[in-house]
Image (cartoon, rainbow, N blue to C red; front, side):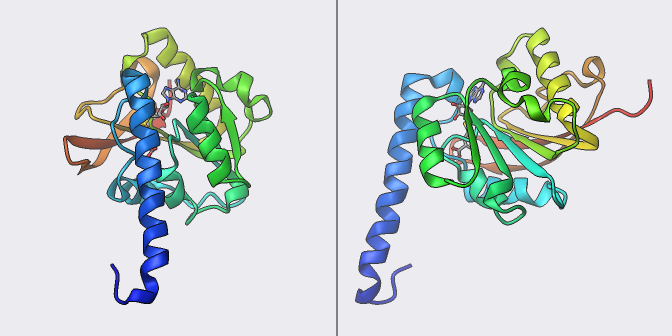
Length: 206
Ligand SMILES: C[S@@+](CC[C@H](N)C(=O)[O-])C[C@H]1O[C@@H](n2cnc3c(N)ncnc32)[C@H](O)[C@@H]1O
């Protein structure tokens, strides 16, 4: 917090930046409540929980889908340089915000269920170490869930990891039907409700 008068301009700047981010997020939530699925950007506690679950990506990329205003993204920068972050966001205004905020990251404005088209070069590779998702996947029909899961695991190697945060205490993906192993790795309060972090890997064997 503020310790002396000299820090006041910096303090004002920091507070006004937080307010601008919150106002934008709230406005986009009012425009598309189901799609944005939260009234405020993710909390630092959730960002810490997510970052703590990610492996060292080495030379590979981290992909974040539904990056919003980048509250989780900031914590990912501890693990990879900005150049090795790929951010996908459906909302055009949020996309523009992300482009300004993370100018060296690859920011793709589009639907995460369309990843093979948005990111054709990563389609069959192991160039992505892990995927962090904040999209409201539980709302998607089964065929869309399956297509999303198949495309994200095709982009990662055998050790691919999908982290999904959700308000659901039960798995937001039907694991057995989708050939996944799932573990709930923690939960944090976002003020109004509890958010859970789910960790998905491909099930080994047939
Ligand atoms: C819960 S919010 C993520 C909040 C983000 N962690 C933050 O702090 O700003 C979910 C985000 O996913 C985006 N989204 C929803 N459906 C999407 C889709 N199909 N593809 C890409 N982004 C999507 C929304 O626009 C919203 O920004």
